[in-house]
Length: 162
Image 1 (cartoon, rainbow, N blue to C red):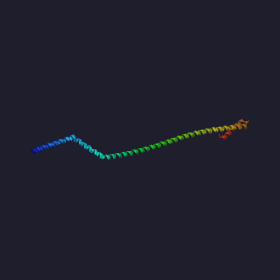
Image 2 (image 1 turned 120 degrees about the vertical axis):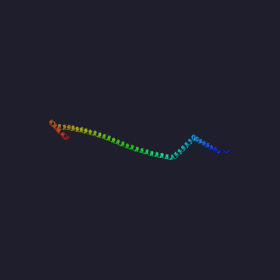
Image 3 (image 1 turned 90 degrees about the horizontal axis):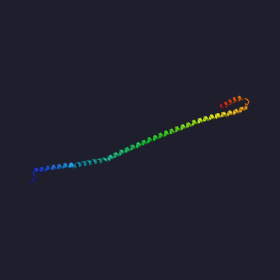
């Protein structure tokens, strides 16, 4: 017996329903996982295509950063050298100022010592002249004592200028 057109139609409808059921089962049970895997794979492929350019970009950024760090280090070194030079100049100036002060103190002390010794020598000279004069005048004017005192004072004044 040959199938009738109703039977064929029912078979076709049953096959369509079976196909829809298989499609829905496939989609809900396995389809989402496969779709997700395909999307992940596409994303990975896209990342791999862009990875080389991203790595080049990262390397370029790293090179820029390293140049920047080297420049900053050079600037820092230059500033340290300037500061060291300024400190050395200041220290040199301080040493020179200290040396000048010590030299001035030594000169002042020497001036005071010179004045003191000059005064002592002058007094010693005056005493010596006075003693010598007294001895000479005493021998010359042994009989008139007041005349000898006046003569000694005048003589000392003429010799020393005092």
